Length: 90
Image (cartoon, rainbow, N blue to C red):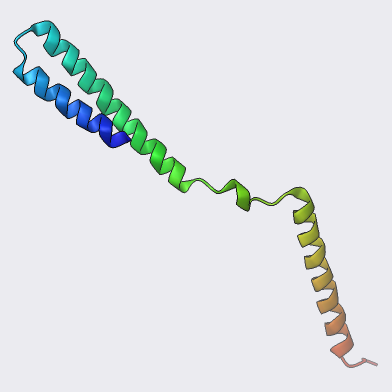
């Protein structure tokens, strides 16, 4: 879609170069300026949209709590395995 604004701006410049009326030239130049601004803003919006995270990949609080509990259980199990594997000192 942003590329249509660039084509519109080029068309407005072409009409402005061939126009004999000063009012038409000014109008075409304003249309071209507005189209170029819309083109740049459209490109920026596309770029921001491409870099945005997908909302479906976000975790809800219950899933995050479940993952934390699993991680704590794994750490506790690993700590118990390490203590069981150490020879008694004494």
